Image (cartoon, rainbow, N blue to C red):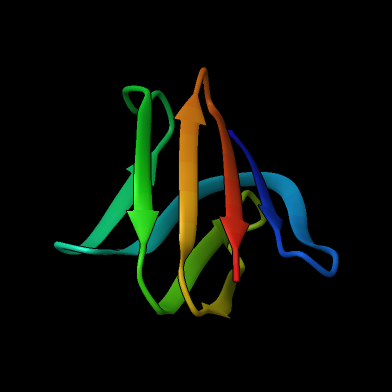
Length: 78
């Protein structure tokens, strides 16, 4: 699946991933390939990304919004 993480300043990440863990308002949640469509708000915390090369990357955010649709995730983060 494709992940884009965008802040007001720049695009932080754009690439193919196998797993993404987000800090949600009701707790952390993970999105995998073929996940159902979802829109959710995010709280401050870390986004953990596992790329298709099996590398783990972490991004700290102060909040934001996620949209997942047809294996494409767009994150608008602060």
